[in-house]
Image (cartoon, rainbow, N blue to C red; front, side):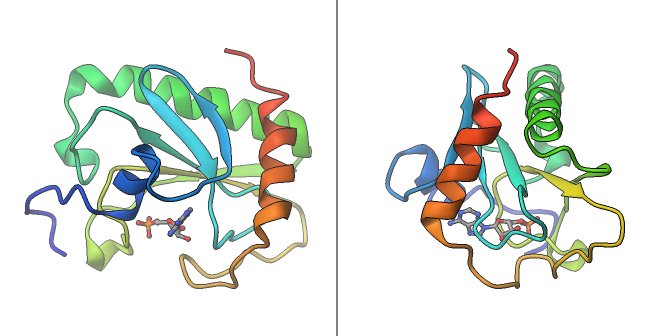
Length: 146
Ligand code: AMP
C-alpha cells in the first residue's frame, strides 16, 4: 500500500481494538493501547497504537493527537526497560509498504535490545507462544508508571 489511501477498519489492529482479535495487553489509557507483537523481533517487542485514530501512518495523524500518542510510547518504553533491563531500546515506525509497513493502522514498535543478541526479521519471524506473550505483557504492565 502506498502512503496515500483510505483507512480500512478491518485491519488487524482495528480488530484488536474492537476486541475481535486477541492480544496480550500491556497498557491502555484514553488515547493509546499497547500489546505484545506476535512476531517479536526480540523478547519484549511491544506495539503502541492510537485508540481513536483513523490514521494509517504517522503523516496522517492529527497533530493534536501526537502528544498523547508519544506520551504513551514513552510510558511503555520505560516499562519495557524497567521490566526487562535491556542494554538499549529501538523505537521505530514504518510508513508505506516500501518502508516496510505491513499493518495500516498507525503504530510504534518498542524493541528492547541486548548487547551481542541478534534482532529478528521485521514482521516475518516465528510466531511467539501466546502464553509466553501474556506472561511478558504482565511483567511489563507491572512496571507501568502512568
Ligand atoms: P509494521 O510492519 O510496521 O506495519 O508492523 C506490524 C507489526 O504487527 C509487525 O511487527 C507484526 O509482527 C505485528 N503483528 C501482525 N499481526 C499481529 C497481531 N495479530 N498481534 C500483534 N502483532 C501483530
